[in-house]
Image (tube, rainbow, N blue to C red):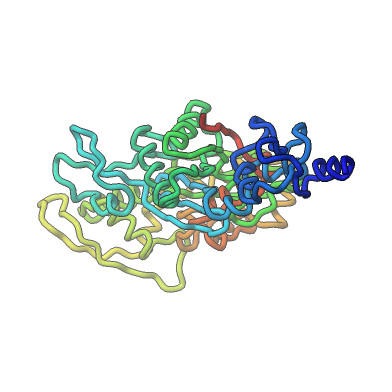
Length: 410
């Protein structure tokens, strides 16, 4: 009887013979909250063996806090593309769940936040004197830490909904070559916004992962991510950037160039929203088979009265002659500094364009003509960075290679 009892007591799946008060519960410090939940779920009749053994020692996913039960419904992983123009959130297992403009509306004197996201974007150029709609990030850099933290908190709360007791893991993309001070600021903003753990990943690497490139292999992959405030150009191999360059030129610089060109040639003053709409509607970087035209309304620069002019895609191409050559020259510079073996890989795989700037008509043809290498646009260039951050969190082995910063809240 004694040997049978001992055998049952040492069997982790058997029923414990000891009284309730002396059952084989593990040491309190050796289990996580999820393990305690599983013990409670299995019931008091299950023996977990000698106290020197940690429950589920053969299942490391329990120690990482990824319970099949709790992880599915409560614990969430989010990848955040913290862009100058837009913020995208990727949820593990669901895809892109939120897309908001990176705009915050505040009162000038009290700094009270009135709106965040799309509601705040509608206020640009239409606010009274005491209200201003600002972008917390400029040229890929945090310009206002407090507003960035509030915007991150808004995004996390929107996607977490009512799961306030189970804080998520978050991975945020940052431009390549971001200084350590700014990286720490992004991590602290994520933790202060409610994240349990915060990781950082460089935007070119995240964009390459989201575009489906095998960044962890010993092979060259070239990515050009044209965002709102910055353009990141990088050659990636073995999960890291081999050569790269970041320019503070992007979609915003193109909008400003269009507005300046129209003011100079047509004496018409337009805002940044109108310039962006014009770029999206008729903008192109390469001659089109059928040119397009669009009516633009603004204020006459001389008389100050309303005025309407007709703008064509040829004029937009001329306006973009200022920012586009800078991007092309930067691409040439990165290729010149790339090892020849990786250049051969890139010629075989093509250069991949991501970001909102990749949607400009004919930009792939323009790059192909200028540098003489194959270029293609990613399937979903707007979401590539956000998808890449989420996929990096889904794969622990990939996360260890590509993460450039991490911190856990206390």
